Length: 112
Image (tube, rainbow, N blue to C red; front, top):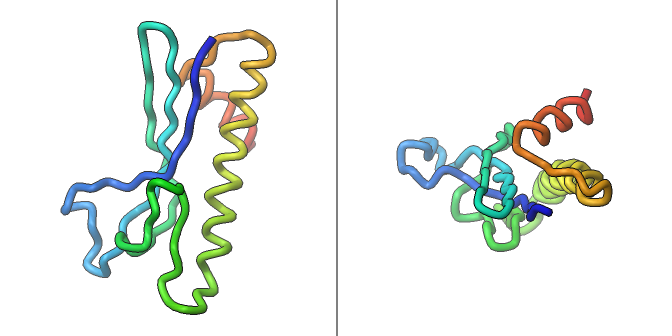
């Protein structure tokens, strides 16, 4: 059996911060098995102000009162996480082991 999770993440290195105060967003994928664990950061190709990223909730917060983009960006994040969860579910239900290598291969096929 394995444990699987994904969550919103950004590089906390000050060099990764754009002059606009934005950071590039990633989904961090974690796959754990007895005696080993693997993580991989998958870029979302989205930027958002660092102070408006809720890492605990894996979502973005409004940049201003009526932010027209926040809902769409959060849907993109949820859709990506749903793809990842679907792949993990297939392996969990079949009783097969999931490694980062097989996850990335299946994600490429899933997005194909």
